[in-house]
Image 1: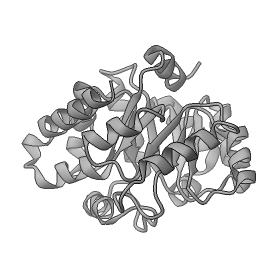
Image 2: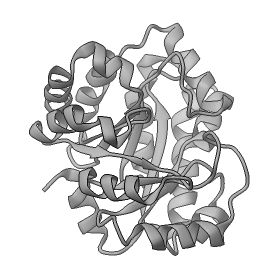
Image 3: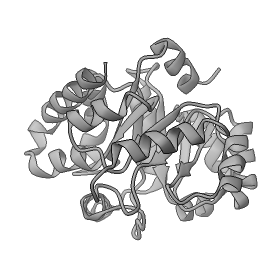
Image 4: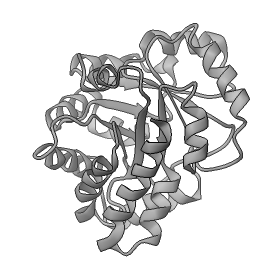
Length: 262
């Protein structure tokens, strides 16, 4: 059983909080410390963004985070090293890499999967890899013991949802609105209905993200989702904080969100 599956089993029906930060933001030396700060606040799973020069699914907040990281020349290999360093002190919190296909292709699917597993990664979400073209990557991930995680959008057709249901492990990430990360206004009733429909084809837990900015929204969605994913709001905290205060600010915000979904 993967660390992600163990995490959901351990929660025993309680909702998981999955915070996102971008590796290397605001600088590479702080990333592991910030990951520990997320855990201190109550994170159940960490999504660690791999910085990319064209983050097409991300809004301006996370785009700026990638830009800050890339100014320090943060690479996929360095992100894996960060996870390995995190694992020296934390062997239980699942870590999911979230990013784009190009860096993974450049490293090679098998090499990436084997190295990610060796460093302590638990799951991989490649935003721009559709399920119809994911067999090679998914095969390499599963062979290495990693969970392939997929996005489902409000516009995803039923046949693609069914395909995702066949491939996905760990959890599925439901994009709660049409648009980029951090954008728009959520319709809670619409999201609730969509998740109920998804459960007809998807048996792994379903997390919701892309528009959750406060405890109130997290609480409302936790009634129907298995996990709440928060990214842009946390990245804003990093952007606004002095580097030495960023860990404490993240921990406080994560604790507030975790309390809301209990």
